[in-house]
Length: 123
Image (cartoon, rainbow, N blue to C red; front, side):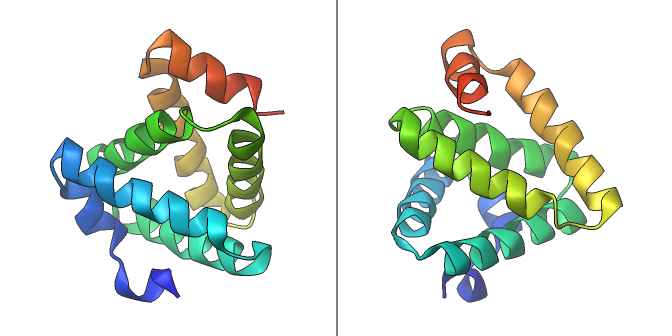
């Protein structure tokens, strides 16, 4: 559904506020989908980012997503993170490793409150 018409790389290149706005809409859409559809949508986004984005573009995407996600209730954060980990585990090894490296770099660069909220729901 949403994955056909969106280009995560283009979104990652947007100015911060535009990027945050678009990613926020995507998060809302993702949360409204049934689990299988959400998984497929997220997989196409992660595949595009891990295989085509520069490190900077990928970090831009991750930073905004983590900041936005941290504003949701813990249960939502937990569900989104669980879905993301499930999808990341299905990526080819080289892409999964790149994903993990970028995610950790971004996570460690975030303000403490955002970082804490993400980490406590990463179980």
